[in-house]
Image (tube, rainbow, N blue to C red; front, top):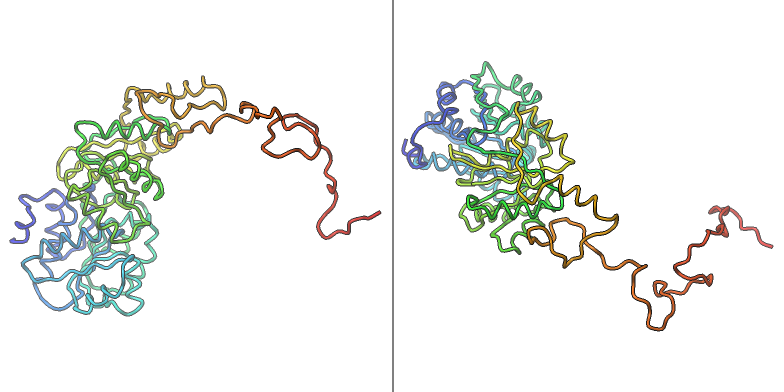
Length: 447
C-alpha cells in the first residue's frame, strides 16, 4: 500500500477493478482496454503481490513489451510500486551494450522487463534463465505482432515452465493475437473494455490540406493558445528528423524521436519532453504505443498512420488519465482509402475541419489555374504571409529559353559548341546512329 500511495494512486480505474481480483486469485487474464487507461498497474499489482508471498531469487516474472521506450516505462512503474518491498527489476533491450544487462541478470532479479529480440538473444546464449518464471506478461501484444515479433514470442514461451500465470493486455485484438491468446491462456478471465473508437476524452478530427501546405498548417496549430505540448507523428524516420530540425530552427523547442537514434539519444529526448525542456516531440510510430507523458495537449498526425489500427494508438497519447486532449490528422487527397478504412474500423465518421486559408479544394483550383511548369518565385508573397511550405516546389531560376544573351552576341549553347555546326536551339531531325546495328562481341566490318 505504501508503494501505491507513493505512486499517487487515489482510486482504481475500470480496467484495474475488472482484472486485479482475477490476477490476485492466480487466474490467467486477457485485458483489452484503450491506451492510457491504467493497464500497467492492472498487471503490476497482482504480479508484485504474488512475488511477495514467497520471496526467493529470480527471474520469477517476465514482462515483454514491443519497444524500448515502453519497456523502460513499465520498469519505472514497477520500481515505483515496489519501492518499499526490496524486489528488483531489470530492463533488457537492444541498442545498448549487452554486458551491463548480463551483469544485472547475475544478481538474480525477481522481475525482468524486456523486448522480444534481446530476451531471445540472451536466452539462446544461456545468459538468461526462465525456468523459474511464475508469471508471464505480454503488454501491447497486437503491436508486437505488427512488428513481426510473434515467432520470437513463441520461442520464448517454449522456454517457460508450463505451469505459470499468463497476463495478456492490449488495446486491440486482431485475429492472429486472438489465436495466440487461445493457445497461451488457460480458462482466462476476459475483460473487454476497449472498442476501436478513440477515448471520449479526445477531440479528434481530420484536417484537409494539400501536401505542400502541411508545414504551414502545423505552425498554425502549434500557435494556438490551447496547444501547450504536442507529439507530431510522421511516417518515416528521415521525415521526423528533418521536421524536428525545421521546427527548432523556426524557434520551437522541438526534439525528434526515431529508430536511427541511439538509446542514449532516445532517452534524452524522452526525458527532455517529460521535463518540458521540449514542448514538441516529432516521432515515428515507435512512440505511439504505451508512452505515458502527462499533460500532452495535442497529437498531430503530420502523416496518416500506415494502418487504421495505429490511428487509435497514436491519438491515445493525449486525453490520458481522464484529461482532455486534441488530435489533428492532416489528410491529403491521396489518403481517401485510409480514411474509409479507419472510419470502418472505429465504426463512425471522423469529423472534418477546415482552417481558413488551407482549403484543399481552393488549393487544387489555384494549382490548376497556374500555367503548367510555372511555380512561385522564392521571394513571392504567399497566402497569409507564410514562407515557402515544407516540401513545396519552387522556381529553379529562368529556363534556357529565357536566359540573358551572351555579351559577345554568340548563341548560348550550354557553354559548349555543337560539333555539327547547328545552333543550340534549333530543332533538327535525328540522324541514324553510326553503329546502330553493332552489338558488343560482333566483328566491326572494315573497308
